[in-house]
Length: 322
Image 1 (cartoon, rainbow, N blue to C red):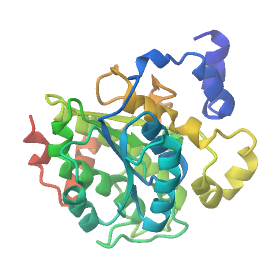
Image 2: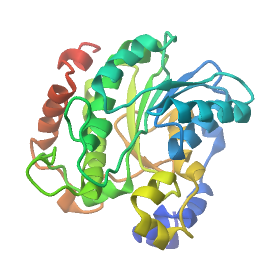
Image 3: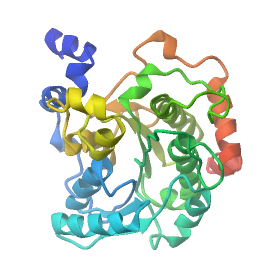
């Protein structure tokens, strides 16, 4: 990378925007991706729109069997029809799943008519304007971004291990760069609710969770990765962050550009680091831009224990696979 590129990347704006993607894309090596994903099974949560839909569509176009796990089955079926046409095959199927509902998450593995899962993409996201709770009474961003993905990953362990190399991918957000892991009142019961902060904080938790899961699965064939898509023009951004969208709409990435690293992590022949890394535009990226966002000693382990307890996942769910 040249000095000018490095300077633009440090600016954040000209790294996360569409011009950043185009600059970074000049270094992409398509030979690093498997030529075909036929025979592989991919699950994408929140796949009826935005980055999830774009990722699902490209993975299906490359030959994968793709399950669209969507909160709205009506929107999921609409996406299913459109993506089947795009992919040129019918191995795209929508299933209803509200990731914040732990009962639904636990039931999902038995509903899946596949013996293996090659890639599990945790993409579903919410940015609520006011505090809302999941069916189990948890704050919605905590339930959707942390508890549901943890429970789903635990429930799919057998299917992930049945694949030659199961991959778990968390779609985080550049907003997490503003946050340090903080478990104080993480369910927002004692302070005024701030949806943007709740979103960014739980996206930071996803990055921490990536490392924690990678450690526990290090001696297995399953790898865990996190990425952020940059600033993409999606419905969720338009609806949840209208002021940000108005200011940046001319420079935002397309959903397909935002989804590119999800496709890369799903289809790459090999990844370095093998597991536990944070990625942006197909390359490893720092998990922190400021020293003040680094977790305090013991906080990551405290997150792990709290998430296991709230998700109802036994501590040995992952350790037992060693």
